[in-house]
Image (tube, rainbow over all chains, first blue to last red; front, side, top):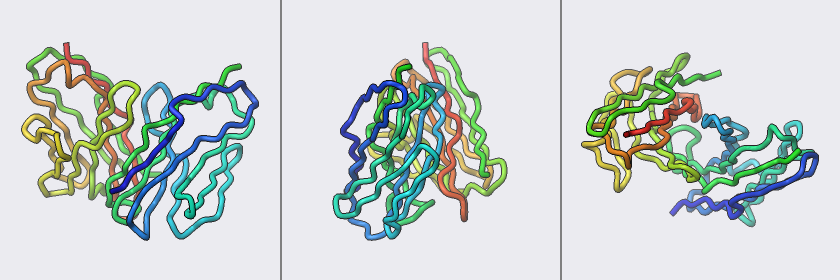
Amino acid sequence: AQKVTQAQTEISVVEKEDVTLDCVYETRDTTYYLFWYKQPPSGELVFLIRRNSFDEQNEISGRYSWNFQKSTSSFNFTITASQVVDSAVYFCALSEGGSSNTGKLIFGQGTTLQVKP
Amino acid sequence: GAVVSQHPSWVICKSGTSVKIECRSLDFQATTMFWYRQFPKQSLMLMATSNEGSKATYEQGVEKDKFLINHASLTLSTLTVTSAHPEDSSFYICSATGPIQSYTFGSGTRLTVV
């Protein structure tokens, strides 16, 4: 069965520190998609990244970077030089069935990140 | 980019009444709509999946007669919580996908049943 595990429930850092949010997934699909979303206190889900299982290149977008390792079934997310505005709940998700838009998304439990000034 | 408009953003209703939540895809055809529920400090749990023109498929444990989903057009899906009770108080959020569009989430609806 598909499963996403975010073992870190809450993380607290001081501004400008780097922080890594862990995500481990389980799937039997050979083709699958992984996602990261940010959920600020207002509740909406902000899309951060989508990665398919055939693309193991790490990605960097500004202060954000992602490390995808199929060998360990992990898709970790790092924020460099964290800022107070990064405070939110972050979700890792896996799409079922090998599709990027038809299978249901399986969400991890979420990691609450608090960045203190 | 793809946008899904969800209304209302929050609603308070009396126990026993029904509440309708709408999700509209503004610039693409939403062939599939997913409805999620999120309790405080918890993750998003899928309630049901609907394809345009078809009956929704409900996840195990979700009462289909209580949570009515309609997806009659390619731009509109509705979730009606019938005979709402305080335990139905939650954050409900939709997600639409299209022929080429990946998951686009609405802004969510916070339901409080008093």
